[in-house]
Length: 82
Image 1 (spheres, rainbow, N blue to C red):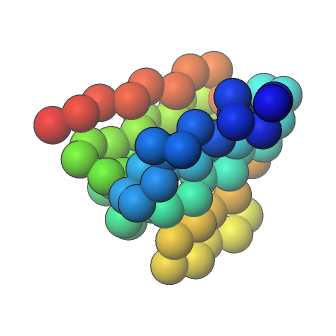
Image 2: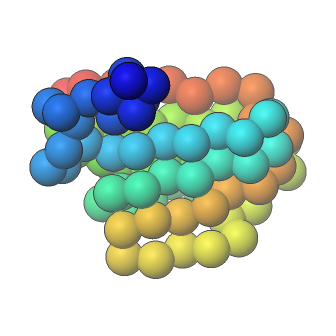
């Protein structure tokens, strides 16, 4: 039953999947491109809004059409619907 809790049946389509491992590793799946990027802030378009990642020494280690991996000292994640 834990699987149903982690991935509810309604979570599909354009919903992004965000996996934060500790404070230094972030996986973002189903993104729609980078809005802005500095070593202290990353803003990524997802679904009907965007995700803002703040931290220190942020580095995009892998970037693909639908997913990306970010390393660095992650201090916050913000989800904004527009």
